[in-house]
Length: 533
Image (cartoon, rainbow, N blue to C red; front, side, top):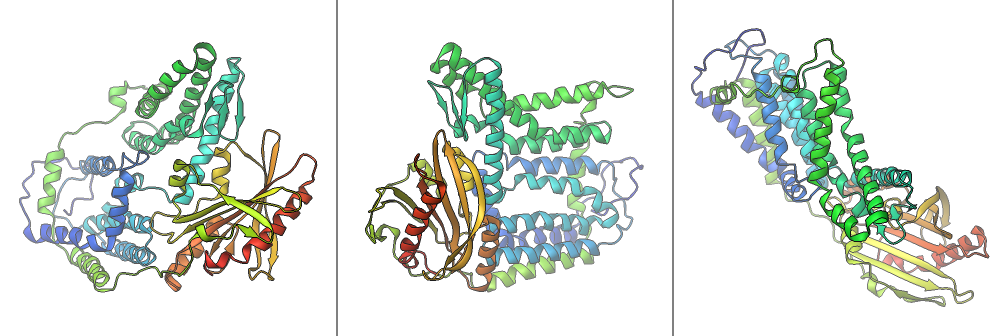
């Protein structure tokens, strides 16, 4: 498949036939990649079964289309392809990253390494001079990958809040009384929960993918393409906000039944198709800004002519030393990985949290189960949701622990920063504060201290990420610690530890905080039985 580096030469009839050696090497390279990237493929299949990433299987097909489209500018020839060693270097780097991801059992790392590997194979087959021009279709494959969980939740909550805030503004413009508590939209007789309000945002990822494709196919100046690409996210958020605004008006004018009917109709693919239509309208408007505007049918390049012949070139792919080296590298790493024992996370001995004491130095407590939906999203292997009452004042402190046996295979701790807004609570202040718990065996470390508010109710929250004898306040640092420990000690278990107490109407923040810290010191003594160091 070594092709000309001259795009001006017209494509002639296909007379390349079959090259058994080159085709065989190419197929073996693909098969040789399966073992080292396998956990990434399994992770992709699981992600594609969810609503957010159900578009995933279409992405490789679209990338193939983009690749074939570019091939029409590069007709076949027997000329040398130029330097291929950059492709070998990229393949080697991708395999190294994949091995690291396998050792950590982090499928996200393996899947991103696979995209890099594909780019390296393209550079190896076509050479640097030509292969670098075929990286846009490879880059498009990124849209089939799920975001890392920590980024996904932070992005989702941010977009949900932004969409809800703009939606409430739309409702207020219509003269309808509305109140926003965190991400709960209060319309008086009807409350729109965040999951309902923002279900349209789950189509953000396919819309981003479509806008990328749209920008490539669009015939116009570069800045037009940039506008079309960057407009995808704002269009999605604004469309979802408009949906919220209409629901608010329907509740006020026609009642809850009409609003719920609209809610179920105007979501998902309806929002996706409307956003796509907006992109087409933008393309028409941008064409009007050019000296020679084209109709939409000409402004979007959807020509499929010659694709069959281009696909046939795969049968005539030329064998090369570089392709053989790519096979040796990929196959060798895969065979070495298969020969190694599968890394297993170290199992730690611990007691289940259901046995955590209900009486701590006179503080009497009880537990409550989480709602099924909350428990499902939490995804913890074990959790404690307990409430302890002070023997002196009768005030209570909530003690919550969510424990995870492993945090590198699609599981992980959700920060309270993500969860609090969805319960209607707003974060009034959030900061890291030092704690000295040496007497309790926990040493000195920083914890997160937050004051949250819902209406007139206020609470103080302390939380941190506990794992393998370490305490970390920042969720990104906690994740890096998990990755490091998975390599060095073979453990990825950990927990979220959180304390909450209300601030009474007749007490100061300092008094409520003193109560929380006093109970914290008492409750941490038995915790290592359940969350091992």
